Amino acid sequence: MSRNILRAENVTMQFGGVMAVDNLSLEVNEGEIVALIGPNGAGKTTAFNCITGVYEPTNGCVYFCDELMLESYPHGKMKRIYQGSNAAKYTKRITPTPDRITKLGIARTFQNIRLFSSMTVFENVLIAKHMRAKQNLFTAAFRLNYAEEKRMRQEAMELLEMQNMAHLKNEIAGSLPYGIQRRLEIARALATDPKLLLLDEPAAGMNPQETQGLTDFIRQIRDDYHLTIFMIEHHMDLVMQISDHIYVLDFGKLITHGTPEAVQNDQRVIDAYLGVSEDA
View 1 (cartoon, rainbow, N blue to C red):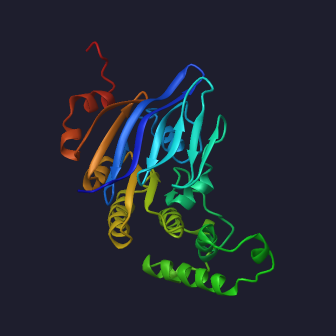
View 2: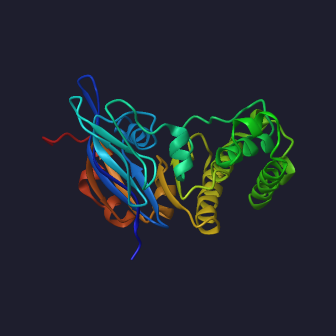
View 3: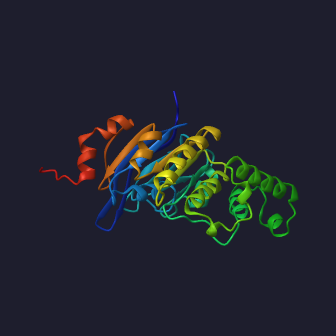
């Protein structure tokens, strides 16, 4: 039986009087492709932001690889932030930062592409490799760790070769076609050696041909890198083709979850997407 690689319990995010995410609980099992779907404004990206340390949730717990990563309580109560099994900090204000989340083994892409657009394809991937570097500030400043730098450059090149992007290594990232930029952003995430990859609307802005290519690409990286993938996506054809499990949000609340077949036939999902009122 697969173990949970990610588990969220009662995650809540409130902005003033707006409940963006309301007691969300979900599980992502090792090796799965899991999708989080819902109409625009349902709270999907906010949920991702809570899990990856962009937002400090109002309430809830997040576990990664069975380790408590974030525990948050409302009304100024204590929160415990864990950065590994042997270290815990007790605080009212600090949450795991995105860079610490990355070092734990979680990588993420964004709905709006966030490449270093003036740098080359190779440089974008190499920068991501530095997230896992063992060198300290002194050795980095004086370039004393040549062996590690050589290893990272070699691994960055190998990753581009595996993604059939080696011929683009010297191309400026911002000059690439949109679909290739999406693939580069995913390749850069892979360079951090994640256990869990979070994709925020990876098919946004793609035409049907590019979307189908991305569908195959996501399957490939799951299998080649033995990854677990958790994604937000609006393209239902993509979601239904590759997801093992789907969670559905509407107005911040989880309304159902299950297999693609069960979800697409659930009347609550149909009503949410069609805008049917509860009185109808």
